[in-house]
Length: 187
Image (cartoon, rainbow, N blue to C red; front, side, top):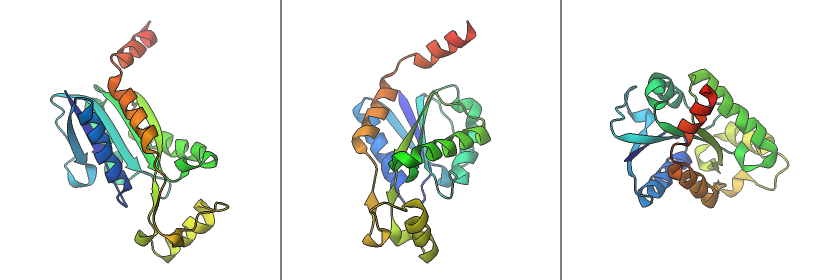
């Protein structure tokens, strides 16, 4: 049984999370196929794939174009498998930003037409060494406004690895829940 883990990354945190998710899946007894949507063709063969985990960061209110294109072009095939979408972003790190983070995820799903079995918001990281002056100032005066976090202090990771582990293990251990949900809708 194989789990496809398809991801896009901008600053590297989502790639780190994807590798971590792959490790969890392997420890749970699955084979994994880790795919960076920036480095592949539009279509992917899912052969023995039984579950799909899709994850991408939010930057400037959107997930990367390659990620959305991957989902859109493979939507029918992906929807035949149990799926989990993880939306990674800084807004997800703070209670006051979670509703906005949820909106970004909802908008991406509407644009792609994809209907996953499960979704989750995952807190990302701040990597100011990757930002120009303008991005650092937006981060400091808009995104982190009122928080005791200064991007000038260097990289800071907000990902809750224990929560992520729980989300992924719950998803991987579910058997037939999507089928039960679909049969309830059909009745």
